[in-house]
Image (cartoon, rainbow, N blue to C red; front, side, top):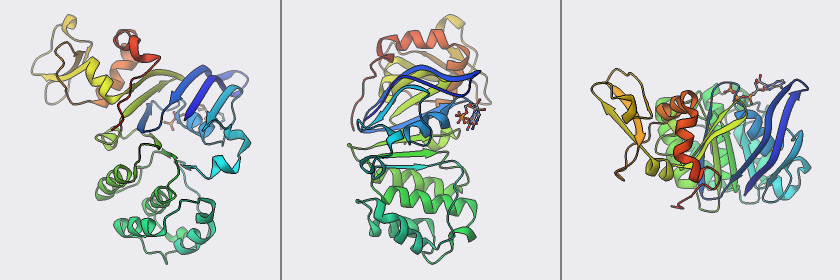
Amino acid sequence: MIKLENFYYRYSRNQELFRGLNLELLPGQIYGLLGKNGAGKSTLIKNIGGILFPTTGTCHVFGLEPKQRQVSFLKDIFFIPEECYLPNLTVKQFIRVYAPFYPNFDLNQYQSYLDAFGIEPSRKLLSLSFGQKKKTLIGFALATNTRVLILDEPTNGLDIPAKVVFRNMIKDAFKPDRLVIISSHQVRDLDELISALIILDKGEVLLHAAKDEILKRLYFGTSAIPLPNSAVLYQDKAPNGWPYIAENTTGKTSYLDMELLFNALLEHKVALQKVFSATQKQPEYEIN
Ligand SMILES: Nc1ncnc2c1ncn2[C@@H]1O[C@H](COP(=O)(O)OP(=O)(O)OP(=O)(O)O)[C@@H](O)[C@H]1O
C-alpha cells in the first residue's frame, strides 16, 4: 500500500536525512512510528502524505506518487500534522467545505465522534482550545474513511478521558483494507492500539516488525535484582525493579514494553537487530 524505494531526502546539501531507505507498509496494520526528536518521523510521513517530495528514489501510495497529488490519491488519504492550522469556520461549515473531497465521508459517524468528544458543531474552530481542535480533526479524519490515515502526535493535547476515547475510535473505525500510521512520543498511548512498530533513528529504520513477531522473538520481564548480562539483551533500572528484554526461548507471550524496546534498540542496536535479522527485510504480519 505504501512503498519507499531507495528513498533519499535532504533539507539542505550538507544534511542528508534519509539515505536509500526501503520500506513497505501493508494494509491491515496500525503502525506505531517511534524515534527520538529529529529522527525523521515527520519528514517521512510528510513524504507519504505528499507534503514533501523525495530528493531521489521513489515513494508510492496505492501505486501513485504522492507528489503528483492526483485526486485518486488525495481522496483516500488523511494526514493530521502535529500543528493544526484551521480555517475561520464553524465545525458545521468546515464539514460543508471539506467533506465533499472525501467520497466515503460519513456525517453520522462524525456526529457520533463529536458527541463522544463533547464538541458542539456550532462552535467556531478558532475559538476551540488546542485539545478541542485536535479532537475535531481526529473525528473528521476518521469519518472520511480514507484507506490511509496518518496521525502525527495525535494524543498531544488530549486529556486523559479523550485518550481512551481516541484509542477506541481508532480501533472501532479500523478495517483490514486500511492502514494507519501514528507517530508519537507518548508510547503508553499506543499500547493496545498498534499492531506493528517502526523505530527510526537518524533516518534509518532500526526496527520494522509486527507486534506479534516482536513478542515471538523477545521476552519482556521484570526482575527484582539485576540479571547477568549473558541472560538478557537489555535491562534497565526502574522503581519496580529491573525491567529486561531477553530472547524468547520458551514461546511464552509477554507484554510489549515499547519504551524499553526503544531504549534497547538505541543502545544495543546490533544485538537486537540480530534477533530480528530473519524478519527485518520481510516482516510477517498477522491480519486480525
Ligand atoms: N524545514 C526544515 N528545514 C531544515 N531542516 C529540517 C526541516 N524540518 C526538519 N528538519 C530537520 O530534519 C531532521 C528530522 O526532522 P523531523 O521533523 O522529521 O524529525 P522528527 O522525528 O519528526 O522529530 P520530532 O520528534 O522532534 O518531531 C531534524 O534534524 C530537523 O532539524
